[in-house]
Length: 179
Image (cartoon, rainbow, N blue to C red; front, side, top):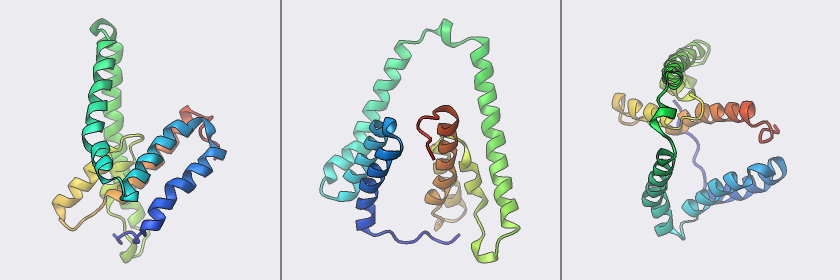
């Protein structure tokens, strides 16, 4: 696959600012979530808060994840959580991930039949179209690196992943999906 274009530091700093202004007009209800995402982006890209960026992307995210897990786990009893209905939901979710992953890879292979040799897609990125699961893009990156250490598929794999998140938002939160 072709490598992505080089993005300048100015573009990386201006993107969150412009995106925040645009989102203010398009989806003001989503500003707390979008604002925090873009603030994290500015912290990372500005380069002036290196220590804060490293803390936020490593220790702080781990602490927040553990605290959320503890609070959710403490508020859920086994009698409520482990029911036949919830086990069916887990099984159906696993089946849907398998079908989505296989379908994504097969669709990418089908698309390659119609592309010129220099523009072909790596079919591994098809597995990253699983809605709202960013880890699928990281799995695609790791599998691609095992086959060829020079592969860098993460950014390519995030595109179908973000599209999946957009579909999820459009279906389940119509107020956030104005476009």
